Image (cartoon, rainbow, N blue to C red):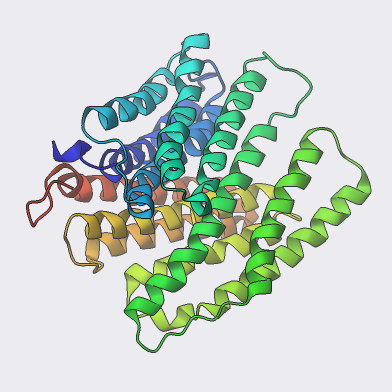
Length: 382
């Protein structure tokens, strides 16, 4: 069955459906005065599904496909991939109900299972360079478990946002590492005049300072509220944002403006330093700069690119892809920039952003359904 021949197929489509459906579900619950979805508040359910539902699906779909290329060894396909996808989908379905401990166990177990599944071929191939993805998945799983423990009252003494803050930091690290590999490589391969510049110091700082941000967030979540730590983190955020701006400039993204399928990658990466700067005075807006602009922007760009490439299609953005890209970046702009420019229309900005987000992923799901569920156009099985 083509749909379960390789990881990106079910998980990209599943992620798009969750992204397209969860925002309207949250909006209906919020406007209807619902006090809970799946045993937690609608806001927390929305937060959980974006960070621990949608994002991991895209990450896992990408990694199940990439580890094949990195190691030359197989990753789950057929019934094994179907069971893995079913475990993720069960977490989403149970999340709509108050399934208690059973629902939590199903939801939390997904990422450790994937980590083991990917760890085996990486270990067999001796591919230690990419073994960090196993650590990323396990930390995300731990933060998911922590989220449930805090929000359901099973663990006291930690702030509500501790788990989601660290989880987003970890996703940020993954985007920084993978983005640094694929954006300059894809760009230079497609544009003859583009020669990305890479500085060893900048590369080390881009990753190292981002990791340090995670450390400071963990310390603060654990109760470290001293003024010195807060001042240090503000300086850290400014320096880290500057490093990412320099790194991005070295990739010469302006030379990709004629190729939308390439341009959207550095455009999404640009939201990373924007996120870091906004964290100083606008933490809520910073979160959406990261989740809508950087995370969803990069993921949507990679979902379209890899789906087209791995199904034998030309890497060319059609009107449907342009609509998806424009919608997601407009969603980020209205959610982040709108409230800064015209704060009196805050609710309108949120509603507009939600509609644009839903449009982006609804269009992707509808347009890529036949691409992801049918055989390659050259009739191979992947």
